[in-house]
Length: 259
Image (cartoon, rainbow, N blue to C red; front, top):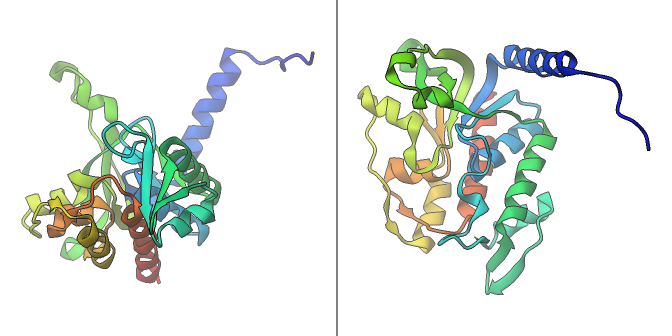
C-alpha cells in the first residue's frame, strides 16, 4: 500500500489559509456578485462563468442548492415542465416523463450535478457568508455588497460587535429566493416598492417569472423567487423549471449589461 506523503498540521493549515487568502483577495472586486446559492443563482453563475465573466456567488449556509434538494413535503423528487428539462440534458441529469410535459428527477442528483457543473465552469463560491447591505454609488447605483461571516449573527450581543466588510462589483444579482434580501435593502431606503408574492398558480407563475427576470435597479438584477416577491407574481410551488430558466435568463441580461 502506498503511504501518505509526510505533511503535518502546519502544512495543512498553511495550505488552507494561503489558498483562501489568495482567492478572497482576487474576488474583492468582481464583474458580477450573485447573492444566494439556490438553483437560480447556481445556473446564473454557471452561465456567466462559461462566458469568462468574473463571477462570485455568496451563500449564507454551509451548503449550496437552497430548496433544490427536495421537491415538496419532504419528498426528494423534483419536477420540471417542458422546455426546462433541456437544461437537465445539458448538465447530465437523468429524468423521466411522468405526465405530458412534466418531468421528474431525483433531487439530490439534480442539485449536486448542478453544483458540480457550476463549479466546473469556473464559478467561485464563498459559503457561510451573509449578505448584510448594498454598496451604493452615484445616483444610488448598486456597486457591490456588504458581507460578514454567517455565524456572527448567532453570537451573543456582548461579543457580536464585528464589523462587516464591503466587496465591489459591476453588477449584483439577487438570487435569495423568497427573502429577496438585496431588493429589501433598496426598499428600506425608499428606492423602490415590492408587492410580495401571490398565491400558488403554477401555470401562470413560471412564464411570468421568466418574463420579469432582469434589471430592477441600476446595478441590480433579480432572478428566481426574488422576482415573485418583487412583482407579486404567483408562487409556483414545488416545480423548478422557472428557477432554472430564470437563472439562465438573468445571466444573458447581465452579459448584455456588462457590454
